Amino acid sequence: MIMPLPIAHTLISTSVFVAYRGGFSLKDDWRWAALFAFAGLLPDIDFVTVPFLGFGAHRGFTHSFLFAFLATALIYIFISIWRSKTTPRLWAFLFMAMALHPICDYFTYDYLVERGGVKLFYPFSNEYYESPLPIFMGIELRHLKTIFSLHTLAAVAYETVLSGALLLTTLYLKRTFFSTGRRAEQ
Ligand SMILES: [Zn+2]
Image 1 (tube, protein in one colour):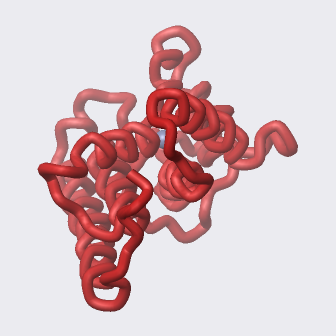
Image 2 (image 1 turned 135 degrees about the horizontal axis):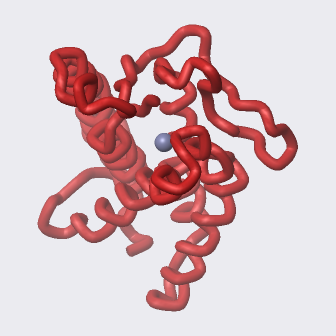
């Protein structure tokens, strides 16, 4: 079993939000940042099926690009109803935040060796795709002994540094080179 943990998905989604928003102010933006974090975490909703179907059911449909497309479209429709002014750009960035989740999982070492990977292209392909060169370390979640281990600590620290660096870099680039970031949409 695998994953970058929620912390990596949240930091990566926040990076997408910063790119969308043109900066980040905790006071003004926390609701939108929370929405992007929600989008980035939603694919793991299939964890609710694990007690019934086992870990093999994880990383199926909810980890496909189709799910990201449909789920962000739904979120976008809700936002459009709630606020009159929305643009397709918001949908595109929400899609990016959600689609990056299965992409990050693709680049994570999968301890479910009998069937690792992510069903990225479902329903066009039922194959589970897994990068031969993982970026994230992954965690074995099937045993308490491996969850509470030094390896888990190292994996969490490593992915926090990695995705935290991405967030800081996005903030830096936005501030330095794209200081005219669009803030007019919200
Ligand atoms: Zn996942």
